[in-house]
Image (cartoon, rainbow over all chains, first blue to last red; front, side, top):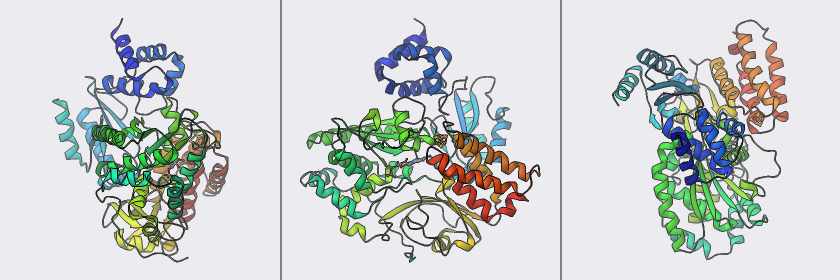
Length: 154
Length: 387
Ligand SMILES: Cc1cc2nc3c(=O)[nH]c(=O)nc-3n(C[C@H](O)[C@H](O)[C@H](O)COP(=O)(O)O)c2cc1C
Ligand code: SF4
């Protein structure tokens, strides 16, 4: 058995094999591997006795379940109106300059992916962003560069 | 219409009193009596739609079914809303107590919090608390087990039937209603879906009594409400206020002195221009809100605001029905075309017609409410859209 096969089987043992288990399984794959690749989806489909198309259809619906390769750290900068008013553009530019990537891209070392996202629920402390599950608020270009650099050394 | 004076109150974040005493007290009374009190309290859902909570619980109690569920909607995706996060961060125990209370009344033995992915940082704390409370409930003989499920970044999953689809492991596409979740919800079983803040309110009512509760707010808008206030403000953050105040009083208190417009209710709510602040009441008799209040001063371009909202909707539309899927894209492209002079200003009138059509032709509340912001911004700030 391949690693993925084993991993998916363990998840199905843990969460169950009914349709309701699909989201928790996909979510844990994302937690561990940052995205769900084709091999994982095919294995999930087999374990849950669904068609691979069903699994892909579900996974691709959700913006936090990526189906293309992502970096180890996914940066999601809030682009909704109040964060925008408070200077999210400058924060984005600072991240782009530091990582030398554009929105949607992954660094060549596969460490970071830069994305934008809709309201994170921190408008009163904007601009805000997530790095994986961790929240950062009241960002400035200077502050965000420090944060990114601290992740570079992780 | 009479408005209330703006008044700050403090119920929601008050530390929880003895949970088990409260639950035991409710369990010693007749369930129907409790429901009557809940209905009489006038509490309406805090998630936006404003359905009478007591009535929802009554329908779920009366629904036939051996298995029932309680779901706490913690998807909080409406732009500008962040009060549910704060509740779950500071007084999650009250939310869980409210869910247990609901489970007891309607006869459900399982309850889930559906937490948006963006709030995953809360999950260690919530999981720990749930494990403790599950034991406590057992100790008083209340057969109810709490659990947690996560969203994965889809605004539409805040819509209760999309939320249920998502919990069932599917794409978060809203269902046709009826049937409503109270009769056919999660896994086809009767299900109560309530907002985080609504559950806290039910606990407050059980604590202070419906008589006391009714003294807060107005006839149509009972009780207190958390407001998530942001934008060009003198103070930002989460504030608990009695319902029913005028927007003018609100702006006096929270605006920066140069307020041009307030977006009440988030991207799916309404934009109110300065000239209408006095006559606008915040509550179910005026403009209801799930709590999002975004304040814009005269330095802001309302074109940018509208552009930002339409970008949001065209991304978050689930794409299941044509009026919303195509409508959102056309509105978004349409205002850009007018701005770039590729279309005449009168094209906005056609877009308004499209937005009006989306109100009744769309399948769920997402598509139905895109017209709220669109029409109110275009009507009040037309020059800013065109020039
Ligand atoms: C597009 C859309 C998004 C919604 N998002 C939320 C949400 O994030 N939280 C919420 O409580 N209700 C949300 N609702 C309302 C729910 O469908 C439902 O009415 C609510 O959870 C019921 O709880 P309540 O009666 O306690 O308000 C949303 C509705 C729509 C149409
Ligand atoms: S109105 Fe929009 S979000 Fe709702 S079902 Fe139709 S396409 Fe989906």
